[in-house]
Length: 134
Image (cartoon, rainbow, N blue to C red; front, top):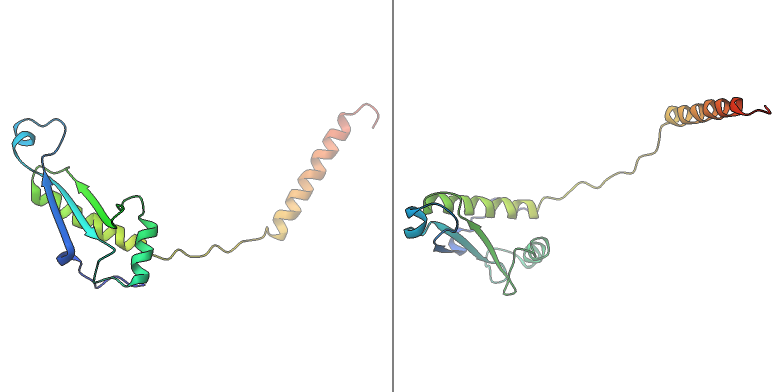
């Protein structure tokens, strides 16, 4: 499941609009907000197995039509937001295909077992001495 050498840029669709929030004239007249759309279902660069992995791991970010949407409006210019969106896309795709190591269950060591038992014995002795009839 290696996705490293693939360049997805030809399959990107960009939409621009005016950013929301405070910012004065720049926000009101310049379309700096950038939205990247990537059609996962109809992508020619991905295998069916890769598509299924992306669809399952990024299901909250994907529309019903199978389009992955990423938005950026932090920069004051369109080019900066476009670069951020592309960078976010590649990071998301890379995270999808990273295989986590399986956790090996460990057992307590012999010394830790002995320490636990000796502390239990010591605590029971202390409690026994507190009794009137010992």
